[in-house]
Image (tube, rainbow, N blue to C red; front, side, top):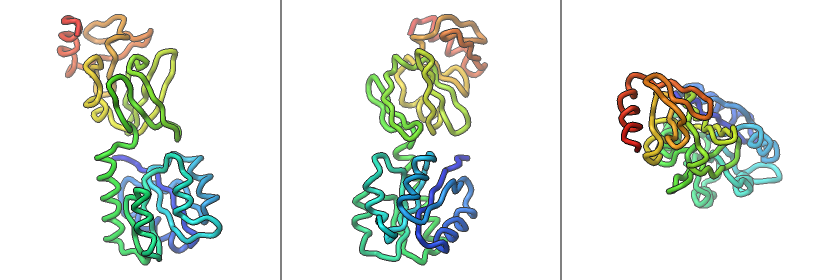
Length: 234
């Protein structure tokens, strides 16, 4: 199960405790930070790879909406506010949902469902895939990676490690099944945890594939298909 990292920014301690209490009743969510104002919240965003941000609007010095506008690549956001008049502005900034205080648990869970649905429609790790390159989010930045740079892709739980030429690596939150569906035909699955770029394969047998001196296992379930593809020179 995915473990989504959550940040809460609200100047009311009680409001922050309510959000943490609600999240404790839902599997797969970890509160990695909280802040009472936008300045402290910005530091938390920079220090953590946040999946979901719960954001208040009326806060000291900098409003929640202005804080959101200041982020070049904001995470998914659910606004929790006592003021309904900011809802239009919030949705103009592509927030997932806008909750009015006091928030009922059922309404809170509905917002969580919207968040999870938004990830299915637009996965957070693999932002965009073009004909010859892909964009990924890694370490709070977005990287453009040409397919020819990728040697192989490794799955580690809910994350992917994309291995590139010149020993480059990128880590992003995604699943191997999701990226497999997007990649061109020169990328083949050899194992439940590995996808390789055939252009970088230097040798193989029925058990192993060699890529730039790395030996990767070929599982029984993929073995015959891998051998056929290489025999055909695809």
